[in-house]
Length: 236
Image 1 (cartoon, rainbow, N blue to C red):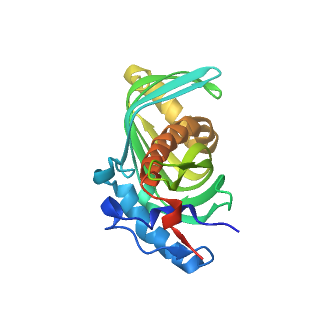
Image 2 (cartoon, helix red, strand yellow):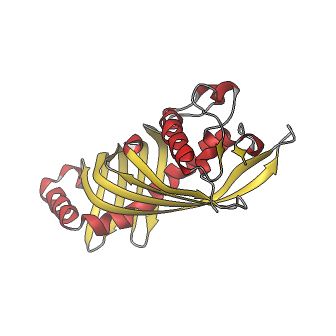
């Protein structure tokens, strides 16, 4: 049997009391679903009392991608739209070692500063300036590796040790300003190539972004879970 990960987000006290509800029985799926829906928006907005930053919008200072023949760096990137994602099939195994989540994100937007050089599949690319990426839909699947530990309060808590992100893009539009130092003809060629090959390019570019983004989100989750004891979230 599986227990939703975010049961751990809907049962606690103190700084969390304003966003949490009463414990759910492990087999009460309706209770778990309602708890998830009520807790996630507040989690994404951040919880200042626990030092948890907002995840929507999410600010990432630096993202680095280094591939065969091409390298890019994104600076001061902001991601918008996680609050538009609808979670489903979110599970936690009975031994508390595996967590699975799926999300359909109807809109995601990312903007910041970029620097890129190398070979973009079959054409050269070079530039430095502002960028933005908009996606009409993304399906994101994340598998987490978790462990239980006993805190100083004598109670058991969850900790996320590792994660693996898989993402399926259904649409993406890119805009890189100042490609080739403003040489319009070369820049137009690259943008045309990106429009015609957006799926391959997204599959190439995306994982440094997701890994950096979810690393920060997992840090927030662990700060959250540190304040939630397993003994307080389950009832028989």
